[in-house]
Image (tube, rainbow, N blue to C red; front, side, top):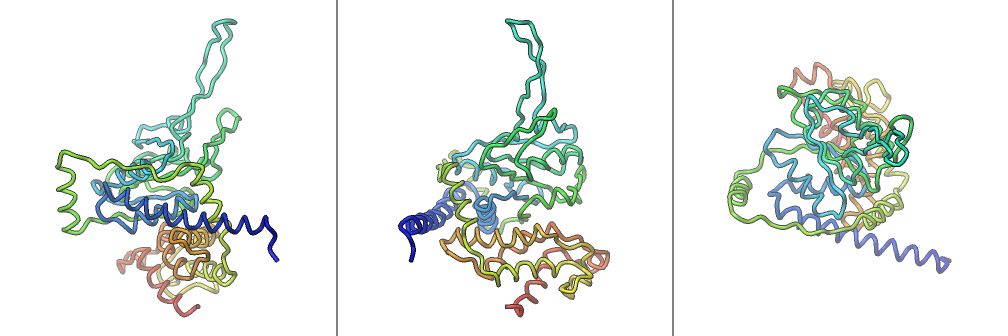
Length: 339
């Protein structure tokens, strides 16, 4: 029989679950004041926020990637900073640097660490693949450890902390592919596609007018931290965890669980972090609609965004014109028979 304290915890989590669904609905409304279409991308960004994960938005210039991130930040009562990645950007331009400061009373000179733009709740890494790998790597520790080390001292980043990065297709001139180690730090990769004709007409109508919709704040930092804690507490059935792990392992060639499409088209599959994010993403997606337990469909729904940037395709895939999302789509069809 549940104690009074346990009952209170359960009641609080039920209230938080309802709040998660409310926040998700309100965020959609606020973001759509500025963004036309891209509803699936908006929902997946909210999944990343609830799961406390980073997201990478990929698309050609002019598809409102930067505006989307800025709008999401405006709808959250969080500190926001933007870093425009350029070929001459240095690591210290992101993390911060030490400066010599003179004490006017004693005349002594001391080093003082000046924090960079990474010390914010939401960091927009704009066009992250337009800077060389050395500078890209400056974000690695921040994204994984949520801390920055300078001159032997570690500085903790504020909570919550997200990197929402935009990237141009790597085929474009002046781009540097992100290293696999850094790609793996992004929970989700979200492709941004061209709008439909009707959506493009709506964009042209809105952006050439004289007024701009104000975006209201939906949630505070402390509330978001509480919702992230709720997502972690949502139970994942062992069968669902097994399904997520099998899905990740099916992307690895030469494994017993490898799918036939994997053997044909994949050189390197997703690592264990993919299994973790499939489960966590399913939990966050369940919370976003007010569900207490994630389903297999939740795992399948987040799988393309979780797995796409973790697969390395072989020459056969390139010759046959297959993309990572084509491979994942075939894998998900096969997975229908696993449950």
